[in-house]
Image (cartoon, rainbow, N blue to C red; front, side):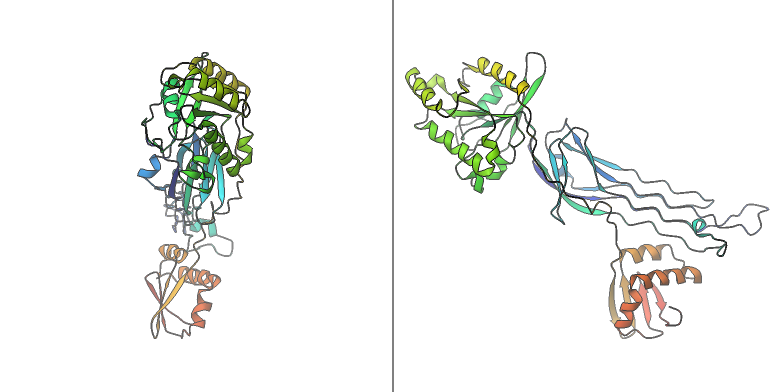
Length: 426
């Protein structure tokens, strides 16, 4: 059975928008051809999709960075760049997505094919043809494509199993699930043999089936995180009902039964209201008198009781017939996950800039948006430089430079491009 991974951290980056193009009509016999620069293509989006054919987040331990395709730059003759391909990341049904920056839960993928957009691609920049007006017939500038959205996310899988197995370590849960399903968990006689949830599909007579989750053993104090603690408890909230397996060969099996139910109540009182099928295991090594005594004692706490031996299969058929009925009768419980409004999926604002004074009369300016602007600016073209300066002014660059004491003829280096500062010009 594949390793079970129930948490993963990933970084997603949407596609950058393609740059617009500065170009002119050059057809024969067309005098003074107008602007013909096309728009850049949009960047690709990043989505998560719930897929019922997946059961773990194992794939995300091998690769944790996912990037959508950038949009193509615009071209001459009003040709627009092609949009970047979107990325669809498949995850198991039951995954909750959390933004690590804000701490918000932004999605609960609790249904097959449920899809959520987590990073929107940047818009393509406009070509110079889009800036032509009656007053400005020859715009010599274009727009850069928008920046991508970068996010760090945490994926957490809450199992969506029909039935959850409860029981102390070594109660016989792993033996039971290996007996009734195709799952082959590791079985040994020492505590916490099961360190990760095992999923098994139990086939019904009509050909359908239901999923049983054999989850790591629970101990006293788990609701406070002792032992496997939350690693256990967070997986059982969506089950239709529980099978509580008790080892009858112990000195005080009732005490263990009560301890587990107490931990359920501490963690989530609603779990204690969930239907439980009490399974008294290991009848092959317990005498009949002891079994009768235990049944009478357990009937004070639970009426839905079966006595079996997972080792010899004795009593298992009757138990399964009962489980088949319960799966049809009881509804699956969904977790009330509070999904918050996602404000970050299209937050591609990279207008932040940094100014460093290199010496008495030289200032270096860097920033994502400035870099994109410089990439579409011909420093020899006065109109393009003026547009760059106006955008920098609206960003507050010149205001901050003046507060730092910049003087006329001081050198300003914007993302590697040198300019001389002049009050009259800027």
